[in-house]
Length: 231
Image 1 (spheres, rainbow, N blue to C red):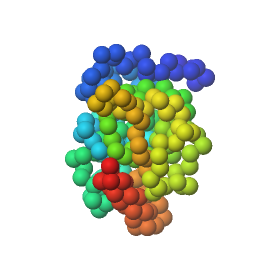
Image 2 (image 1 turned 120 degrees about the horizontal axis):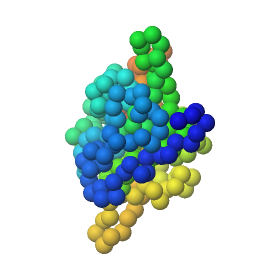
Image 3 (image 1 turned 180 degrees about the vertical axis):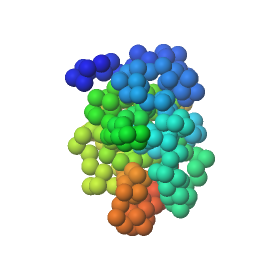
Image 4 (image 1 turned 60 degrees about the vertical axis):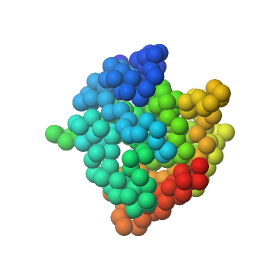
């Protein structure tokens, strides 16, 4: 695919008869919705509790995640686990995923250097995220960093401006009707009720003052914990 081509998107690779996250996970390796699959080792789908009260959405898998096929198992993932523990969140009640499911990178010698996904990659991969939300009923959605914010809330949302605040699902969200959870009794569907944005844990690793950055992440996740308990 030429760089100027519009990716076909993931929609046609998602089975119509998906009834569970496992169904989606089995289908995801066949996705050719954008060119990122060509160089990545494998697709990295979400993982965690299918009945999670908290869903965390990050950017894309990194080098370690790409090799292991699991999200947030590299340095940023270990840091996030520490922050989750310090915030008092039960990791067994989490589901964690990424806005883009393949690793985008640039080769420099033998090193694979992370590259931020473009808008076209976010849009192409969006149907997977929509399908995950369609099968989850979280009390709180946690947006980890700018790329996840763009995927969920559009380009105008700024994490630095609104981090650590409990927000309703905003009217400005792109296609808010796409984000529907499983039907409640009576067949009524509702969008996620609460959202909290914070920095991506990789930003802590890059910070000049890691302790301050880490404590800020923990403080934001304490807000998430309280919001999840309040229902």
